Image (cartoon, rainbow, N blue to C red; front, side):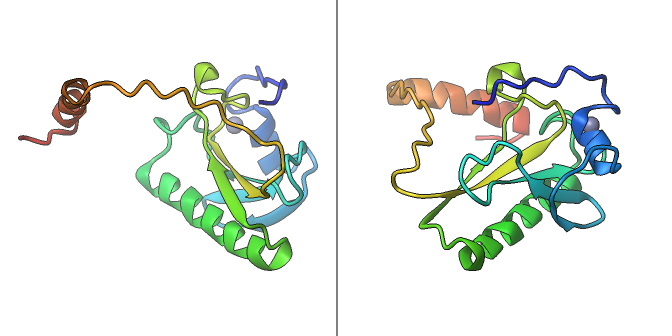
Length: 149
Ligand SMILES: [Zn+2]
């Protein structure tokens, strides 16, 4: 994960300034709700960030329309990768909160071309709980979603 952490106040964060053109960026796509631009770190050639234009810190702060727009833009970028870089794989990464490995607190999604030996790794420590525990977790979420049964 990148070490840079943006501690700017909401509304003057690094992505807000980039979207306003106060900070230079290599833009690849823009629509009413989103901006796609090259990630400075380039985990792999072609690594793009898709940010919503309105300052919203996390997935919990964007509107459903903004979330959908970000995914639409990410998909368009992924389609462009096919011709531009022809990667055998593509990874989307969207982090929320410091503990979720978010480093710029303005909603964005990484779209990363992937290759078999690219050294990109995600620690994924499976806990494999028993079925009864899964049902407990599911019931908590269903209750919050208003799903009965
Ligand atoms: Zn911002």
